[in-house]
Amino acid sequence: MDLSGRVALVTGGSGVLGEALARAFAAEGTSVALTYVGERSHAEEVAASLPGGTSAAFHLDQSDAEMVAAVVAEVVARYGRLDILVNNAAWNWWVPFPDLDAMTPEIWDRIHDTNLRGPFLLSRAAAPALKEAKGRIVNIASIAALGPGGSSIAYATSKAGLVHLTRCLAVALAPDVAVNCVAPGMIAGSRMVSRYPESILRAVPERALLGRPGTAEDMAEQVLAFCRSDSVTGQVVAIDGGQTRAAN
View 1 (cartoon, helix red, strand yellow):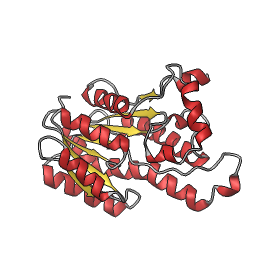
View 2 (tube, one colour):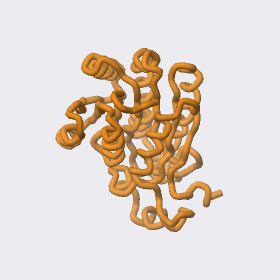
View 3 (cartoon, rainbow, N blue to C red):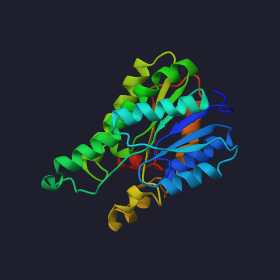
View 4 (tube, rainbow, N blue to C red):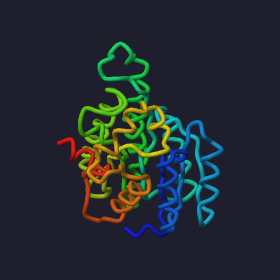
C-alpha cells in the first residue's frame, strides 16, 4: 500500500506512541484522525502540527459502542474514506500479580473494556470502509501478551486477547483487509510506564538483549511496514530490544 493520500484513524493520539504514529503517517502523506479521551489540548496540538493541514483530533471513549460508531462515521464523512485503523489507545493500572484482592472487578472491567472491547468495536465499525479501501488494521498489544508479566493480570490478559483478536480479524476480514499486531515493551515517557515501580523500570535494560527497550519511533516504523505490505496478515511482532527472547 502506498501511504500517500490515505486516511489513518489512530486511537490514543495524545500519548507518546500515538504522537509518534501520527507523525510517522503524516510524513508519508497520510491524513491522520487522532482520538483522545482526556488530553484534548495536546491531541489538538499534535493534529495541528502535522504537515498537510488535513489531520484532526476527535474525542472518543472507545468502550462506548455508540460513540465508536459515531466517531468512525464522522471520520469517514470528513475524509470520504478510511484506509487504516491503528488500535493504540489502552489503559493500565499497577496491581502486583499475587495481590488478587487489589484486582477489583472495576479495575478489571475498565482495562478489558478499553484494551480489548474498544479495539473490537472500532474494527467492527470501521470494517465496511476498510473493506472498500482494501485497508489495514494494526493493533498495539504488549509483550505482556506473550507471557505472564506487565502491570497487572488484567492488563496482560487484555493484551493477550488483543493478540488473538488480531488473528481472528485477519480471518474475518480476509481477503480485503490485512490485520497485524505490534507488541511493544516499555516505552519511555509514556503514561503507562509512569505507573510502574522504579525497580521494574531499572531492570528493563538489563533484561533486553540489545541493552535498551524499543522506542516509540521503532513501533511506528513497524506499524508503517505492516501497512505498506500487501502479503502479511495475522502476524505479531515484539519490539522490545530482545527482552522477551532473553526471558526464554
